[in-house]
Amino acid sequence: MNEARRKDFIDLIRNASPPLFSSGAPELKADLAALVYPGVKSPLRGIRAVLFDIYGTLFTSAAGDIGVDGGYRREALDALAREYVPGCGGEALTAYFREEVLQTHARLYPRTPYPEVRVEAIWASLFKGPLSRYAAAGMDTEEFALRYELAVNPVFPKPGIRALFEKLKELRMILGIISNAQFFTPLLFEVFFEKSPEALGLDPRLLIYSFEAGEAKPSPVLFKTAADRLRSRGISPDTVLFVGNDMLKDIYGAASGGFKTALFAGDGRSLRLREGDPLTEKLLPDGIIRCLSDIPAMIG
Image 1: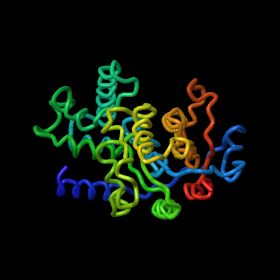
Image 2 (image 1 turned 90 degrees about the vertical axis):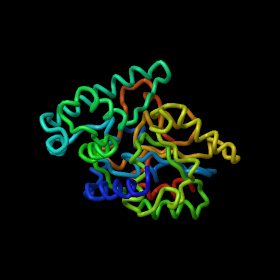
Image 3 (image 1 turned 135 degrees about the horizontal axis):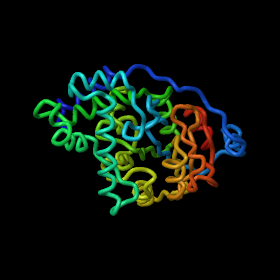
């Protein structure tokens, strides 16, 4: 992505991102409620690195997750369809998209049980195939992919993110991200903070995005990549805290990689407890937070 295009996309995201706020902290069953900080018995000692999920954790998300997995907003989608693919309604547009994602996953399953797609490639395939009769020739699939995401899943940062990063840096924590993401996801930091993730203090070797790896959380590949890079610096997985809002994708994935885990349960829209899932049925995080600002105290 060249510089001019990057700036255009940043402006597009900024202009289509109204303020969003958490929908409130839901009630938790007893075994989880007992872990809500400061109810946790003692801080997590010896933490040297803190890694984060993005959608639903660092950023409030209208869909509660990245748009590939989340819901959709019918009015915004219908408006997008009218402008770019007249004759194809928003609901049909989403149906085409989801079917193409499912078919792509099916082709990738022999390689990994947790395949990730690139959304611009999904739209390119659709505009050359079943949507070719609707769209203008030469459709810019990257821009359309971004506009679709902004229609179905606008995001807004949680309060205090910049202050949290600065406090954790004062505590000499190494910071990073492991997140399901697409090409536009890293731009969110520049949209809302006018700085790249690296300029905000996140370690460039620990910015691990699913679309680059071809693997989606809870794939062990993502967490092993982070663990290997940290281990090369003398940091063992049990001194790493991973913060996320999803018991399967975040807590199970991180715990399987040997990390300590904190479940962010401050937003009922994005909290994913995965009750009934055999992979999470007996799993508990090391702590639960309602506010991201609790993290510095939680790690002592």
